[in-house]
Amino acid sequence: MKPLDRWVFGLLGACALGGALAFLPGNRERGSLPVAEILQEGRVVERVVLDPAAPPREWVLSSPGGGVNRVRLEGGRIRMVEANCPDRDCVRAGWLDRPGQAAVCLPHRVALRVRGTGKGEDLDGISQ
Image (cartoon, rainbow, N blue to C red; front, side, top):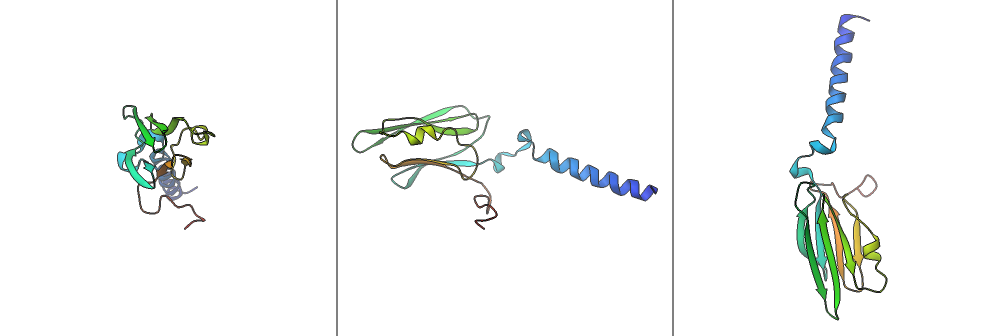
């Protein structure tokens, strides 16, 4: 192996290591964190950044006819923790933390969805 080959391989290795370190969870910038939307009746009630360092928050959404949904934000993720609908599929959806994930309560017309932050982040390779 020639000295120039060593330099080239060393440079490629350093670039690969730097690229891998940029994707570690602790190295995400606040601007690159996903955003969760809480919707009721098709309108956005609240938009929150899914920041693991943010303090826990809760929302209680009331629907006509006595419907109640309780939403919790904690540790960079969001979920419906309680609903008085008959099937409770929205509660069983669990924690949401990645763009494209959603939980919907059809009887109460309440939804959670996680979106990316940059142009095109909500689309995968097939959707584009």
